[in-house]
Length: 211
Image (cartoon, rainbow, N blue to C red):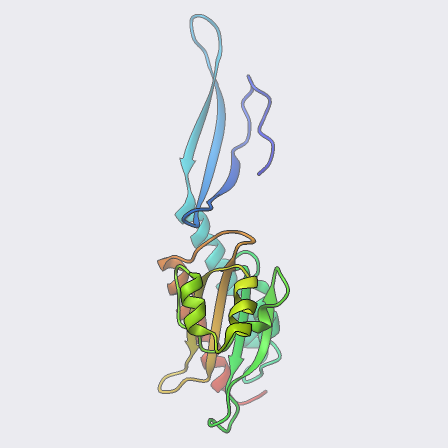
């Protein structure tokens, strides 16, 4: 949030973001202040428009384009995925993990990228399900033991979005996007579509021969 124009003057539109902490819903509002001439004197009016969908769509489009440019520069490589993860935080997510299978598929995938606004995200295991609302009960079911449960609880996870890195016909790894109590946000259908598209894009890049 910024500062609006002085009362009684016309000003440039002010764009603000609000997060409803209870539901994790994000709202972007554009407020324009106008002075209206009235018989008893000028009246200052604030006109507020909900521009949430337009702003989120622009953020996702820019992030996808930037990720595409990075992936195009290093086909088949995994090192660039650190940069891809970093560009998604904090605009798209509070945290991002990328796990990739080795050539020997019987081995667990290895974590090749991690970016987050808080430490400790490496405690998040690979292959979690998507959870729009993360509850303590769900964390208890996902954790292997009490220590893991406590570690996950300490991260303040609010919402998880997990998609496969998949070129046609196979899965090369997992992309995990995280919202935690840093922002209080939760993922929505638009985020899910973005993540699915990005997972396909990363999978296609990984399937290419290393340049």
